[in-house]
Length: 189
Image 1 (spheres, rainbow, N blue to C red):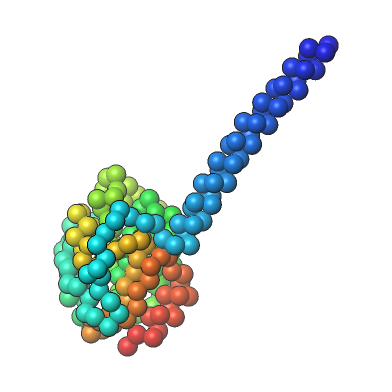
Image 2: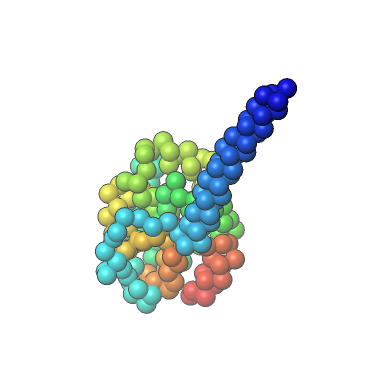
């Protein structure tokens, strides 16, 4: 009888030890994810010395969409533009995408979302992300991160709010909520 009781106690202690270790790992993962949501996800080191600043003209670019259409920033001259850099694996990017979709659908704003494709495992993951979030704004593919380099993107998500004259009016390092987006976009002429 004693052996059975000792056995049950040992099994209970081992179970508790495994559960506690698992719980600590999950807590650490959640804390890391929360830190990423607060500050954006750091990418490999980029040279940000040439990062365009508020008041400067947005660097021109031409990229292809997921459907193969070629889009240039200059196609939207005269429009307010919400330019966002993102990746499908990035938790803060996932958090702000629904608000970007709302901004695009309900407000007079052009949303251009540039995917940092060289950080993705494949195009299917990007397509699945767009489908899962039911995104209808243009998704541009920056295959070799050339545009991200021009804009000094670090961390992601990173957004540039551009006025109708092509001038950068606001830069967000990290995710934005719909209210933040609207507050900043309403200040742009």
